[in-house]
View 1: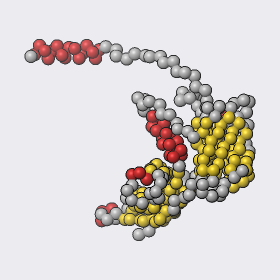
View 2 (view 1 turned 30 degrees about the horizontal axis):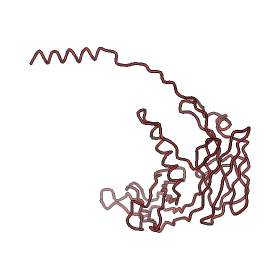
View 3 (view 1 turned 60 degrees about the vertical axis):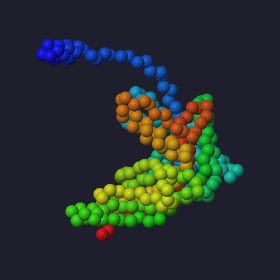
View 4 (view 1 turned 135 degrees about the vertical axis):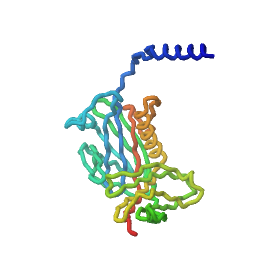
Length: 282
């Protein structure tokens, strides 16, 4: 037995002394930067769109004064058609401060809020760069029924509260939601997740927080009613971010609802939501 143990120890020592690392060179295919479209039609606001180019995972790019110039795709012809009319989005940069958003194509007209209205996107890139198309329709917002502030029943932590947000789901059709939660301002994101109504057997759906809020805190509850394309796109972006952080994960494909000869990725959809602002009071 002693001889077997000594042999095992000698074998482990021999393996430990070996150089088990090996450099491997992998030839990656060249990445041609795809155009990236993000267009969210928000009722009551102008038609706006962000058109940029994608980068390879290993492409160097610095966040200097030239970043926007290198990243934004300018000079394209962008139109959105609906109700037998066509609106042009001009290559004019615009900004929104709370929360921060940037667009490089903006129209003069306001997005109608009519549920069921259908929209068609057409983009022609300059210098024969190809075309991009997409379509979507306006959904109805799902209102927040109530927001309940509930303080911790444990007397040791009874100064801390949670917030419960309730909506009523239409169970006659499959619905998709995006829940966002901000504290203090719309730039301080605390929760951002997707959910379908398939998980609920009752029309009443509740979204909650932990017991982490104090008296005087401001909470912004936002419930987006989104379509399947928006759900799939956002979920695939979140999975791609997770995959990029894991060296052993397979790359995750972005699920887009835009197409065309320009080989684009991105999303063209409507953005309808209900938002409630709550100040925690005991």
